[in-house]
Amino acid sequence: MIHKVVIANRGEIALRILRACKELGIKTVAVHSDVDSEALHVKLADQSVCIGPAPSIDSYLNMKAIISAAEVTDADAIHPGYGFLSENAEFADICNNCGLTFIGPTAENMRLMGDKISARQTVTSAGVPILPGTKDGVPNVEEAVRIAGEIGYPVIIKATAGGGGRGMKIVHSPASLPNAFAAARSEAQSGFGNPEVYIEKYCERPRHVEIQILADKHGHVIHLGERDCSIQRRHQKLIEEAPCAILPDDVRQRMGDCAVAAAKAVNYSSVGTIEFLLDANNDFYFMEMNTRVQVEHPVTEMITGVDIIKEQILAAAGEELRFKQEDIKINGHAIECRINAEDPEKFTPCPGLINGYHTPGGLGVRVDSAVYDQYKVLPHYDSMIAKLIVHAETREEAIKRMSRALDEYLIEGIKTTISFHQKIMNNKEFIEGDIDTGFLERVKI
Image (cartoon, rainbow, N blue to C red; front, side, top):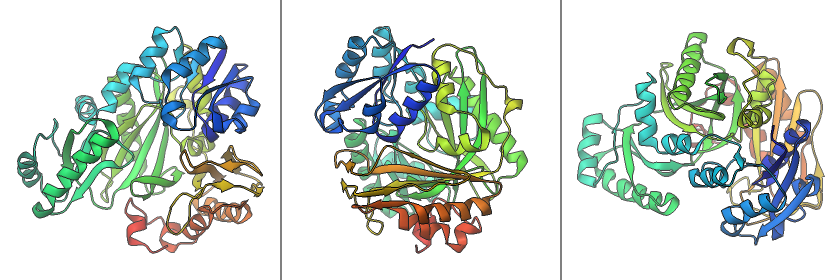
């Protein structure tokens, strides 16, 4: 069993990992930048180590400092959370070479599924449907024009090493393709150090539906149902819910089977997510695999009762899954709102001092957050400061519960997106379930 874990992250996910470790009887080490010394996970961990100054590149992305923190505290494992080093294959290799358990998939898994072209090739061989597109990177704009003409417009250009919407351009006509191709390559180079892009058919007004995977080192793979993550702004998820309200049972079964097949095709061994696009005909297509825990994992925990972080830690320790597929039962409906320290009109970051803080409560309400009254939201990191999650018997009840919980949530001193989420919960189309990834572009909120 793992005895002591270095939590190589910050904010709510660091606190979430810490809580899971405590319940498993595992000691924790919080690493932090010099400006994060008052962070809640630092206060609650068994030990803490400062790993550098505020910039992420000097602290939370500083592999040598994190490994050193593990060595000086006699930790035997590192949990990367999400973001930062969570999908860095080199870091996973370094951990293993230093005799540390990396709580996540293998470096090989990350390399194979982190490159979108090799991921598409792998899942295709496992029988998972993909959108028509290129099997390899597109070398130049002339080839891009030819391929797009064969596929048919609209098409989407994507960075092969991409994520988070960077290096991604939708093209509706031949005239706009050259500029979009150049922009995608430029963004890919600056964002990921790799300018390679590929092209696939663009699915109009799709839903973003993903399947949560659990896998151990003994070849066992199950899924925990799906999440609908269609409410997005510039490809960034804002609201997630589980299950998908409009998914027929037979499609749900096929999607889950495909996700498991994809994970088995790479001998996957950790938690992960297979992401799909779902069109208006309920046909679905593989989009990508996230080889880490997701921000939105709580909605799946709420409807299944499975602690995903605990299962991830146990799988890394070499234990077999404690569940079989038939053990997983979906109960009710859950919704998550990401609360960001941002201007709700402009979506620009609003760091600063929180001088009043009160969280909502009541049946079926959960808040995952590491902020508190008099906490200073820093400008150096992601603006998400909390996740508000609710659970109820039906989607209709969950929306009402979320609306009530948002009304109770008090964060003073800074601007947040609470009011934005309140508007969504009261929007007629959202309530009726008429949503897709372009919802915020076509609906005035």
